[in-house]
Length: 316
Image (cartoon, rainbow, N blue to C red; front, side, top):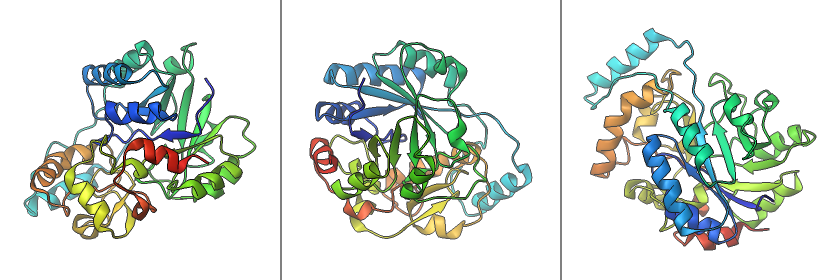
């Protein structure tokens, strides 16, 4: 498969829908259906639904998580702090997001690409002999991973950092990271700050094969973006990195919870599971100060328009 120049980012946690994926594919892009936070059964249903809506190229994105040592004392203190503040909380536990079952679903699905986030692609994927595997990388060190192509994530990107090591805070802007990786020899898909034709052209001129955008699609009618998240994007503001909501560095629109918890420990997905009930309650109540509002640095340019129009606006 020749990679389309415009790629829809996975957008796990709400915005990713079969309808959005299909709309991007029907407009000539490549679209990822996000597996993150879904059961294997729900992922299978979404991939089947997306394929019913398009015969264009589809991809599926998988979280690759392995349990690693964390500061248990810091996690316990953070949980106690949030409890004292009166937040509804869950259990701060580790889980691998059902990776093995989701690999089974991905390999059986009618998809043209499988991508991974948070870690190197498992051997089962690399040796599948059927579907190319892309690895999301956020540093030169990560790029040493085995994969058919690299999704190169610059510091401008919204949502979680794709870095394998959450302690790595050497965030490089997209064009600088592309310059570091230009001689890699594999296709490079540029992600981070891609919001218009000019930014897409810059990334391609810097050595990228294609551009991947996520924030630019958050206000599309086909997206599952929650109303409180849509309103925050339209309202404006600034973005910053935070571990407060999930225990892993991520870029979002600054709100009260981020400001109140600047020193949240590194513990993903433990803190993600801890704050899950709080965030669900905030979404239901339309409270923008207790929910993650993931967005990239260029979110001010996001418009409420059909996905096909966004694809057209990004195509060089």
